[in-house]
Length: 286
Image (cartoon, rainbow, N blue to C red; front, side, top):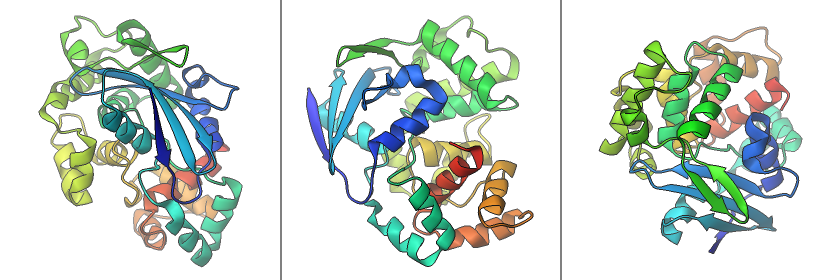
């Protein structure tokens, strides 16, 4: 089954692939210009998508029992094409640093997790761990407990469903408080707390507050879930050192505190999440 999506504003699927391959090249498929991703909904339904771009159109193939409408929603959110991105050019025109980032990463938009639940799971796995360690844990969990889904002659594996995580006697490689946080996330998922449409339908502060009610989800994790899970385009920079360093580096400043970072980011509205994504990509050399 193939679905067509229209893109508004500059967008490059190649840029999405380049970013995603920096985390897991095998999941993308590599080398053929196709973006691939697997996802699992909060009720345990798994799906996989394969996306190709022609001009301002995306062709989305999928392997799933989910409706075309549901798949279109997921694909658009994951690739951040559910938003008219043409306004980013206005931000770039009034801020030369943003203009430099837009030129460096032409058409790059945030690539989101398969679902906000998966973003929440990542936040549980990555607390007090390096990105490499967290990625290894996520790959192992996915390989051992996730459901395999075929799409366009490729087999992908979705992150374990919430019920699978809750019901597992052991979580491969995940122990102690990290396991407790992951199980808490999985237990909360069926209640709808991670529903992307619901999170985007309310004020950002209200959504963040709701997410922080989940055990183990702090301010940074909540922002990650809302921004890179639900795909909110305009969140204030989180109070973390990597965000401050990325801003300071891009603007040629020695260092910035949270207040100064927020002041600078205020000029990026309504694309604060997107611009910080580009700045952190630049700081990481991606």
